[in-house]
Length: 175
Image (cartoon, rainbow, N blue to C red; front, side, top):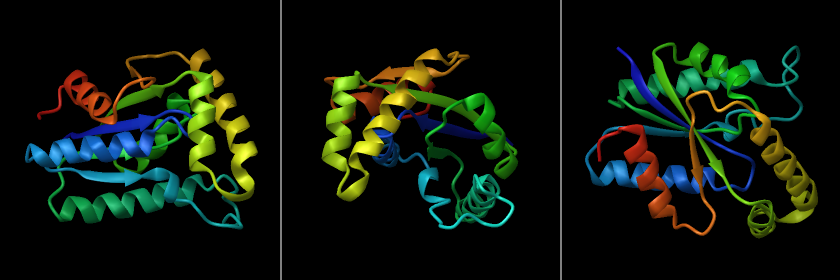
């Protein structure tokens, strides 16, 4: 049986986690069973495992384990948060972990100036400047990537509630 899966992506600082949490709240308010997994946290390990310098194997194993537990607990839908530089290259990791996933990629967009402001508000410590450069580079890369059936959602000047409602409405998920 297919597992409806929203993969919310975009550059660091665009609001993926915040939007995914609101999507989850709106699904919960409607009684729609689901699980939420922030994939950015599935490979936070240093140094990387021997033989897996990009940690893709670790991410896949951790995602598979979490989904198995959520599925056994009754989840029938999945909301993922992930920075995917290229969904075509990265979706195979999700499919390896969750073979029945029916994935709809939701790409969040925001203007560069707003993205920089969001990153500055979020980042603390020594990583702020590097994260801004990385986020702006990611944003530029995404603009060059083909859309190929992805939902593109503009986030500038909009509330999180509006953005989440648009994602659910356009995805056809029940609310």
